[in-house]
Image 1 (cartoon, rainbow, N blue to C red):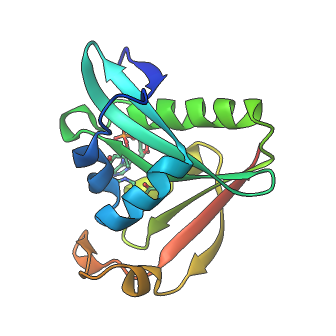
Image 2: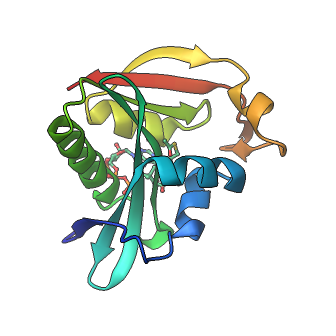
Length: 152
Ligand code: ACO
């Protein structure tokens, strides 16, 4: 699918519906959004996807949010957003790129590994500790965060 990727402008409203699709905590989204760069995948004039890249430790950045509108999913946009983020992170002299997803996120885990991430660990009960409401996906509770990383 033919998309272009650009940064969210300072005078532009962030695409909250999409950001909340990846992360149901508005509090967490509002906490990391100003610390990172928000990239938008544009299909013609429509925002089809979003990705937020945040510096975490020296030479380390994390993709803390990635989401593609339902009608645009499974068309390669998520993959293009991740490859774009890898390229941008390299330009910013990042050595390690990280990402995490909930334990039920099998599609996400496939996508991240297809893009070159390797599983490094599990943050047990992350979603129980940091989210007020219980989250369910694919019929099971989202409790643990699977952590992945890539040397870039
Ligand atoms: N089931 C199985 N495999 C999947 C799925 C899925 N639901 N989604 C992606 N994949 C895998 C497939 O291998 C796919 O290749 P294929 O279509 O040739 O089989 C490959 O990943 C590439 O998929 P894309 O089309 O590039 O992914 P998409 O544009 O659909 O975006 C995303 C993936 C962002 C996970 C999207 O499904 C989405 O927005 N989901 C809801 C929000 C979400 O869960 N975001 C991630 C939370 S974690 C975080 O934000 C750090």
